[in-house]
Length: 202
Ligand SMILES: [Zn+2]
Image (cartoon, rainbow, N blue to C red; front, side, top):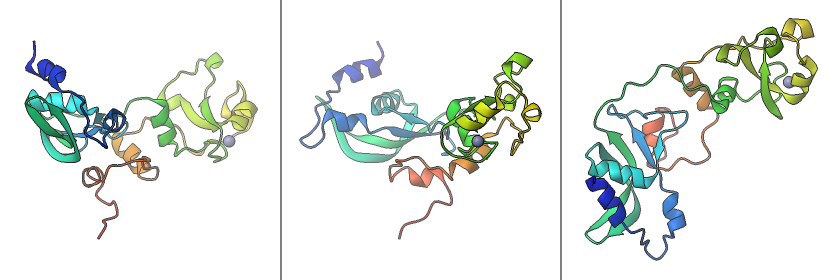
């Protein structure tokens, strides 16, 4: 059995006074590649703290920053890591995953026919019944009314115009758009590792 598995069993989530297990659950670690850039932006590479601690004991990561909270086991007290970096560099893929979130992000969370940011859904530019596929290049963000109006027609057939022809975005492009829609919660220790141009607090 792996040392880490033993350790995992040994670690009691015996959280101290103010730290309920519920709070511990919300202490994910930001995972950086060996070059100290995030392993992934979308989705942001976050590991549950248990996974992070396991990786520390497998000697696969180094700890960069920690939360104030600790975990306790019979022979170990350890601060929960908030930022870790892989020891071995992982070559990132050039293109982000084809997910609903990433597609909305590519289109800046706006209907590609009218610009409305509400009631968003996905439009097959060339409808499926005409052989249109579910790919980066054939799916556009559309609001429900535009989607209804277009129906099973091509944009031309419906007399509608796309703001931009859908493309398969690169990580860099999504990252540029992502800065317009920052996640709701970024732990303070993550900020230095995410963006160069984040506002520096005095
Ligand atoms: Zn619309």
